[in-house]
Length: 108
Image 1 (cartoon, rainbow, N blue to C red):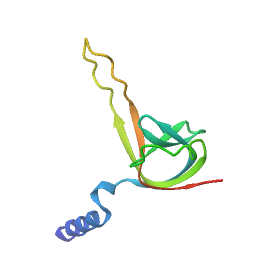
Image 2: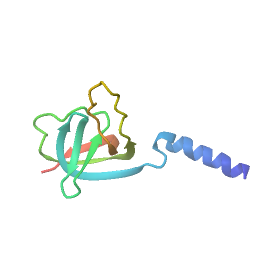
Image 3: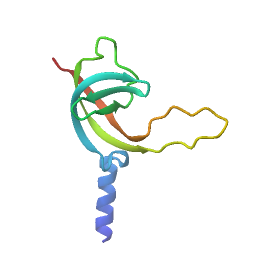
Image 4: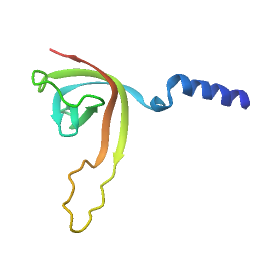
């Protein structure tokens, strides 16, 4: 049992705890800028995948088809409570899909 725990610990260190349980994902879609950052939208899935570390796409890339590869991180974002007397905050609610360490190329 001790040998298994040591082996598992070494594997976790090699993989990186942050990346453990995350899947490598390749997506092809349209480059879009949102307030929350640069994203790739897959039209037939009606989903946006945000790109970690990329705030926005350059104007010459927006609207074009890109291929992105990286680790998929799913984050469940809950609705913030509203405080009476304060404006309702603008926020994203639901599952946020983020591609970590994205590598992208411009398609045709």
